[in-house]
Image 1 (cartoon, protein in one colour):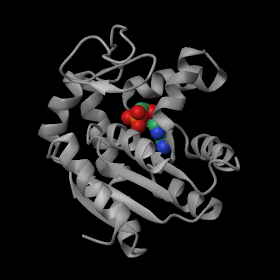
Image 2 (cartoon, helix red, strand yellow):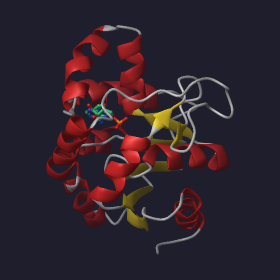
Image 3 (cartoon, rainbow, N blue to C red):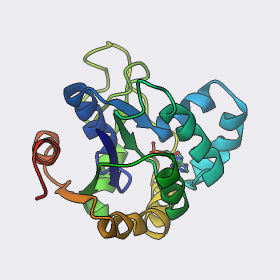
Image 4 (cartoon, protein in one colour):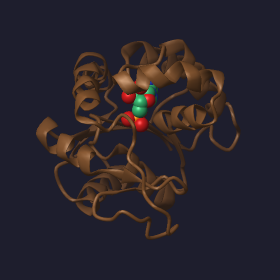
Length: 205
Ligand code: AMP
């Protein structure tokens, strides 16, 4: 199965992608996570990314497309993946169309006030990368959770602006291709996952 998870910052894409990965045996590809690893390891991409991420902007399309193309060329990933945070622009979506076919695009629909609050409470485990909002220590890895440098009020506002202007048009892009499935992202993690599971197991809602 070749999936895309689409949604605003804080809509729960990462959390749901991890559940899909575990239950459907797909490779979870998070471009944000890959970029953050580059940042941590101070690679060329990481050095370029630092100021862009902290401003809430997007990295150049060509760079991110090459990154994803590289991963999708691997035999074990090719037809078995869930993309989280990519594509984020129409240009990226058009480039992806040339690389592979997509089976379903899940759009996690949730409003800004709700997700902003979620992002400000969000903490990530530096080891397993899972996110939590109700604890300061990862229950699986037993290490202190960290806050992302771009999860602050100012950066969140610009990430939302970028989302509205550059990423939201993808909803129509995939609707026109008859690939879009919408879920209500304001529900609990389990309730959102149930909606996704239904779509992946059966048909359109
Ligand atoms: P995320 O973890 O998906 O929220 O991404 C964090 C940040 O990484 C974004 O705000 C962008 O600066 C950058 N990023 C992630 N995915 C992409 C992408 N597909 N295109 C451009 N920049 C990206």
